[in-house]
Length: 115
Length: 115
Image (cartoon, rainbow over all chains, first blue to last red; front, side, top):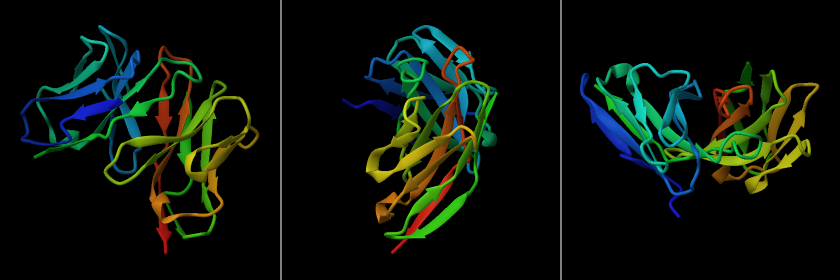
């Protein structure tokens, strides 16, 4: 039981390049989330999904796109990377919302540097 | 609206002494509150959660937190620090006024444990 798996773990991009981060979960959770973590700012929500085929914007969605074609996978795309997108990206999952269902489980993170 | 303030960005203790990490929150709804821990280069792990049951919540690794509504606080404590407790800790509030379980993260407190 792997839980929440993020691929890749590290990546270096040049400005303007594109890439996709993959989040895969085997917990059968409905909700999935993408966060970015920057020093002194905690985690900020980029996009989220409340089920297969649905996505929505979080707090900092600009410059990112997402897709949830399968329940177990949530993809985060950067179409034209910028240095401001240098960050650590975390995927999380939860059963749903509500006081118990909203406990979120996190992947190990992807460290992205944009030069 | 909801917010979280972690009152200390860094806390330093000696091994075997008590740990206190302070967190104040605000929420328009009866909140759920969490503490997560992040060890270096790792993902976030849930330490404990408050979901309107008992106000004193016990978590993993000897940590506990007390929900005080009158003080809007949810401080994390441990009677005796261990070297393995050195990590960054996040206080998190979850509200239910949106279509998903929005989590708002504090800025984090780095705990250093000296031998």
